[in-house]
Image (cartoon, rainbow, N blue to C red; front, side):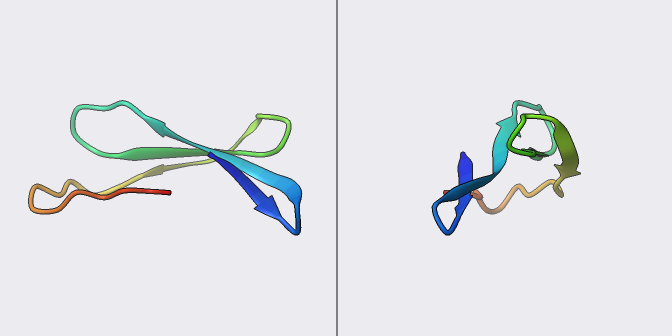
Length: 50
């Protein structure tokens, strides 16, 4: 997913495929890693990022 601010690219967010925890990778506009976020395991709810 491309993140835009005032019509300009700000970041690139991707979901990584894992077996246990959801992982989001946030890159800058040059596609360099900024932060990697590991989420908690949730068996009762499904999260959707749009």
